[in-house]
Length: 287
Length: 287
Image (cartoon, rainbow over all chains, first blue to last red):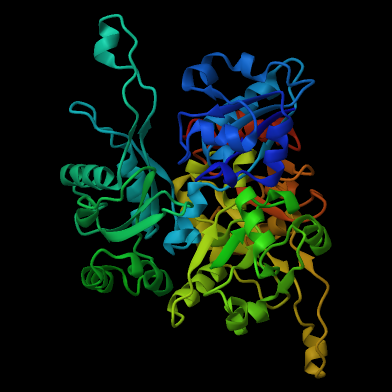
């Protein structure tokens, strides 16, 4: 059996009791380590699970998936994924390839916590979210803004938008690559401040009032861990906020925010007076 | 510390390793048992956790929450919730009450798998969902249809809609109540077939082409368990489908369904020819 096992969000103990049993008896254990990361190192996982772990980077998953699933007809192979397995399409691809194998490889998926629901810790109801979008690091010449149209659709309906932030793990250094060398860049994780800044930058260009300076938003960091941090404010305030270590995410608040949601989320406000003033002026009574 | 601990979706072993440690040392352990259920009985949980469990019904949580949080300033109290704690607003209320307590009661939430992300097992990308809605049991005189407008908003944007289905646990029998007796009705769980039927019924009245007979949808049952079942088809086909034991959920497929999503979900089709024909006519190329 090929098991795709969600690890949850924070550390080695967020795996389910069932998942832990499988990891401890599996023939091989892989860890997908390029779409998300846990807040602890590989060594901590290996010590707790009592098993060596093979790190599966993007190249391995996309080009050598046959070696990953090899032997899973007869034996158990565990493929560990941070968060919930189906929250990233990569793993749907992997499950699809198992199904199309000849003969098909039996697979089973163990769900776990995902940022898509753990974001409920902000107090913003999961029923009031629209589409989820991703934000990538802008470069000088590449500032993709297709997310803006999707966020606009959510804003139009008064819905919240969860924005997932870019992570760069094991990216080849393009300058070195041009000289024929493969050197990997230092891992980078987008912060709430960077995301808020990029949103304001695109708003200033498109001017459709989707994510202006004064739009209310919530930044979260290390959700699900003991060092979890939640900060609410305007996008401008968040562009100055320091939420510390990764992973970060951001929620743009929709105008349908209910009074109960406001009551909960205002406790996280950088400046309650500003937050309440904007809420009363722009959001209250539109639920 | 007052711990709100997600149990995941299927059985006693879906709790996280961290959650299990807390349950085993907590002073008291409650199980919220009215917004969702696991697929195993209380006795199975108690045997595995090695602890007695106090069942918290709606009345206890809404009227006697003080007794639940009592002593959590000094000792650990565990409140277990099926799925993910923040996927139901009840638990946001409970966390809010802890915060407003004098002195405030320290709380911590342990996220876990939720139907909101486990639904990714259908192959429909979680990025392409709009708002989640709930469907309650219709009675002869009460057929609430506010969900219809929200689904219409999703349909307009071409997005998928997750429909969560009603469960009735420990509901007082109104006839008996009128005679001064409290008798509880047998638990009831809405099926995919009942949901599809109610959707078609409301469509026939409102006629906005939101959920017509031929709209494509996916029914799921017992997601995250070994007895998981996924069935795709038109709403009319699903209104005849038997997915067996609870819990069931339904996804109305949006027109932006990508070819990769279609390729995955068609494997679950009741009738692949019908599914593909409607996909090609109404959905293909709109992503």
